[in-house]
Length: 228
Image (tube, rainbow, N blue to C red):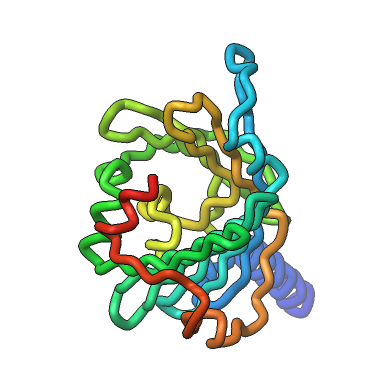
């Protein structure tokens, strides 16, 4: 009988151990190095049928290279390529605009970068119990609200947490990586939707963050505002 109780006790201990193990959740992964690709879709809206230059961004891709506190974000479309490089050591930001023969290198100080993103300061998020899977990650819906009361939808995963969030200023207050999000394109009435299609965790070459030595017209942030 004693042996029977011993076997039964061992069985219960095993069951409890399995249950406890099943309840353990995987901690979020700190995103220190990765290449993230977003597919871009432009929604013109039912009331906006007039063609616009921004419609040429439909079908474009945005590729983010992360390495520690440094990042390089590339928008690749039929118009050309535009890159934003953030120096993780100095906080300085460089825009590279390559549209055929027009090539500009625009230098921003940390204060310039903050000024260029003023509209995204003070964003608040409301989290919704609505989920979907994007690129293999469970994502929760959140509604972002700007200080001008404009709202946008975003799906993010808590499984990946970027170390440096300035590469995506709009979503930097989220507790995870934005896997799908919307952005309004100014007065055009268009809404652009970014959706992650792939994430690669292979090492990112440091050369990705090197600035070209020639071929670009170098401008300050103040000078570049005359281009818009």
